[in-house]
Structures are given as C-alpha cells and as structure tokens.
Length: 277
Image 1 (cartoon, rainbow, N blue to C red):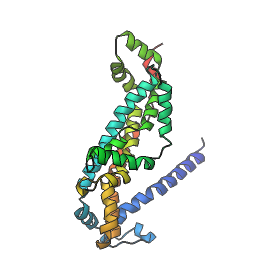
Image 2 (image 1 turned 90 degrees about the vertical axis):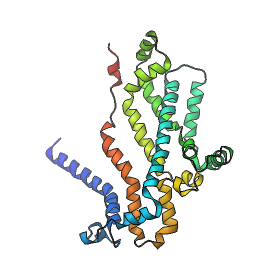
Image 3 (image 1 turned 180 degrees about the vertical axis):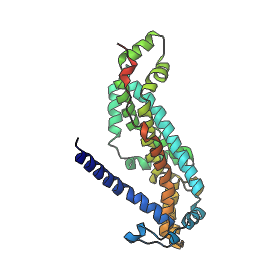
Image 4 (image 1 turned 135 degrees about the vertical axis):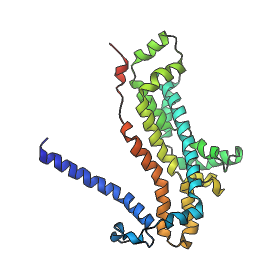
C-alpha cells in the first residue's frame, strides 16, 4: 500500500471517529454547562460556564447512585442467566445427540422474529399477578434471563470445535458437564466475553419492561428514573437541559468504560490449536 493511500485511509477513519464521538462529547460538555447553549458554539463553551451543579441537581431528584445499583443488579442478573442458560443450551444443541434437537433449534430461531412487545402483556400478568414479583429484581430479570441469540451464538462456536476433543474426553471418562467446563469453555472464552458485553447493553438501557413491573421508585433502574425525571420534574429544574444530559452521561459512562476496557478481547481464538495431528 502506498504512503498516500495509507494517509488517506487514516484521514477517513479519523473523520469517521470524530463524527461518531462528537455526540458523546457534546453530551458531556452540555452536562457541565451552567447556562445551556444549544448553538454549535456550545460545543466549545467558556470555562467559566462549566459546573457540576447539573449532576448535583439531578442526583437530588432521582438518586443516581440507587438508580445505578438497580441497573447493575438488573443487568448482572440478566447476564448471569444469559451466559449460564446460553452455554448449556448451546452445548446441548451442538455437541449432544438427542431426539428433537433440530426442532428445538428451529424454535430458538423462531423466537428471534417474535417482538418482545407482543409478549409484554401476558408476561406482566404472569409475573406481576400470578407470581407476585412486581417491584422486585427477579421480576425484572426473568423475561430476559434466557436469550435465544446467545444460545444460537454459543451453538455456532461449539460446532466449530473439533469432535476429536469430545471423543478424547469421553475416552478419559469425563461426563458432559466436565467436558463442557474443562474442554469446551476454555476454547470459546472470547465469544463468552463477547456475549457478556453485547448482552450488557440491552438490560442496561431497557426502559419499557422495568417501567411496567416497578412502581416503587427505589427499585427502578436509572433509565426509568431518568424518563420519569424528564416527564415530571425536569421543567422545574434550574437547567433542565443540563440536568438531563448529566443523567445521560451517568447512564452511558459504565457501558463506555466497559467497552474501552474489554475491546481488545474481541478477538477470535484458534480452536484448532487444541488438536495435535
């Protein structure tokens, strides 16, 4: 590749990165402005106009820390269920031999085309009325605990593992769970982390279901608390625009940090290295 082509590539990639990052930059800058400036000049504010009062104002209205804790518990429970059930189901569909395996996989694919909104009302009746799990973390987590996308992803990666690995484990007397834990999981560790990171975004930003299932403000995730703030309280704030942006920064910060820290793990593994010819 010529030097000119290399320079042009970096210029294009740099311009794309700036265009992608600018909304995040504007959100952070807007959250720090004492007096909002919606004009393009607001992206380069006067230092004397910068303050942390917007964060203090919204924290005094909705308790940012409690909202983050609720979001963390909700998201952590969903991730735990997604990984555990996804690994077990994906392994069973890819490695084990049993009647109805193909039909079960077809049903997992079918679930992909059913919108969650279509199931929301019967789920609410089942969880809130029949199970009595309204205003509880378990009530928020249950509808998302099994993710068919994760099952399909794990199945695809388990299918790539050489069959000789499982045959050798069976010869050594290893059971299915031991083979899964000691042989299969170490070889698909990158996709395990990828599933965790991808799953994180959904429940962390989820609004509609937690909004339906929780009426107690102390139980609501931060996304729901922010929506209630915008609807009911923001108009009475000294700087509603800045306060809303401050809440958005707090909500987005954990996801951004998580992806920055773990982005280098988005790599594939050489699964063939586990087999010696």
